[in-house]
Length: 408
Image (tube, rainbow, N blue to C red; front, side, top):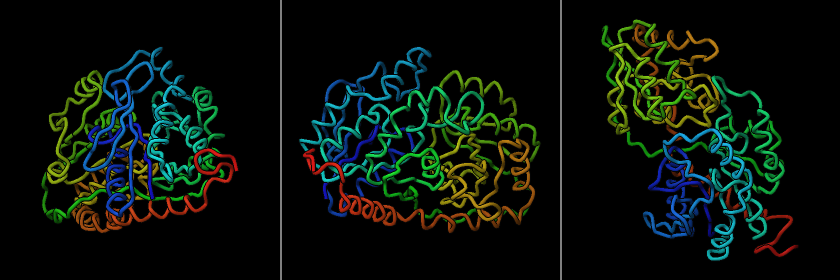
């Protein structure tokens, strides 16, 4: 089987879990003997091709008014213009057509389409092969990809996103199969009427994480090391965490790892007056998890899966998480961590206090942590599941168009 993967970015340009998971998947499918090709974007003009760890990767220059995959904050007017072009970016379709005809894939697997836009669906359908859409975020519903506006999550699509996503539900009818990285994200799209004709699947992302061995049991009044790992942004709940930690007065330290926009980082550092709070910047994941006792994932939006929680649990680190989105599929209350509720902010402080003071609870959830994600950590499980999705889609074909765009 020959597979074309389309994503905004591809290794070594990694911005988040989608790129990490895609790299693992692409290389896993290649290891099974399938022929794989990747089409991603670059800041530079034109279409270039290179090899990344043995994988053929096309990198197409983004035809929009600025490159969005950096930390530079753009003016509101420019952001609006970018999103207007990204509703249906026909300028990018020449690249898609060129690669389709050069590589002649049997199936196309779409992942994050920011920059490409849903115009790729029309281009692939003209070519006449099945389309698989993997849902890593909420881009197809929301211009910001996270259904979060102002200071709160959106419980329904706002007027501006309805206008910016006016074609998307209809174009999703062209998709042969859709994969949610959690049941939560797949259900969100189903509720909005997307992918009505598609085969539907849930496949949790994975990471290859050797077992580092269990955490030492807590037996006395040791200082609890609490960690946060991720982008420093309001939607991630970092301000909520800082506020609750400072009010808690527990015997603990808070280690904040990750980076954000420079002005927001300065705002957080001004807010965090407590000497128990340390900002670490970028860290090596394994060393970070070894240094902390508990990870907090206080995301205010519905995380599609919350891969950082899985990584922590794999390191025997229990997780305190906001009860929302895909986190509900990996964190199990009082079995491998504790839930808190953003609508009841004090629950985060209470959860940190419980794990600080209740040694038997901490030892139990830490001792259970890795076993609860053992199946998710199985890379063969993920690759085989996607192989089955692709084979089923290939056999079902496209009822409207036969291969290479000839009408049936």
